[in-house]
Image (cartoon, rainbow, N blue to C red; front, side, top):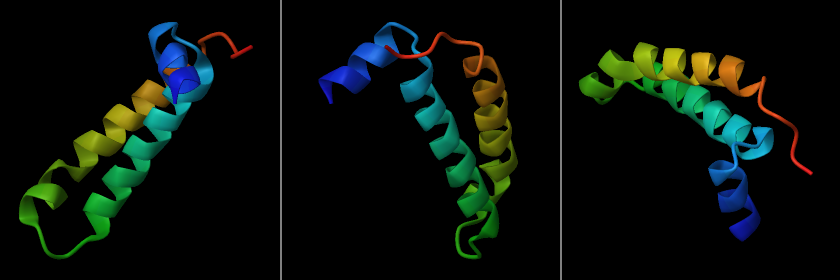
Length: 64
């Protein structure tokens, strides 16, 4: 856990890619669920933020 938090603070690729991937997955889940309208409403923006975040984070330095 400490290694993950250090990677977040020092802008290393691994932890930030994990967060971006989880956002993309959350957005897809929100899009596919049939129960909560607000989740469906915000699913596109969550997926878009995760995708743009992943593109930006892919330029961060590798973790040592």
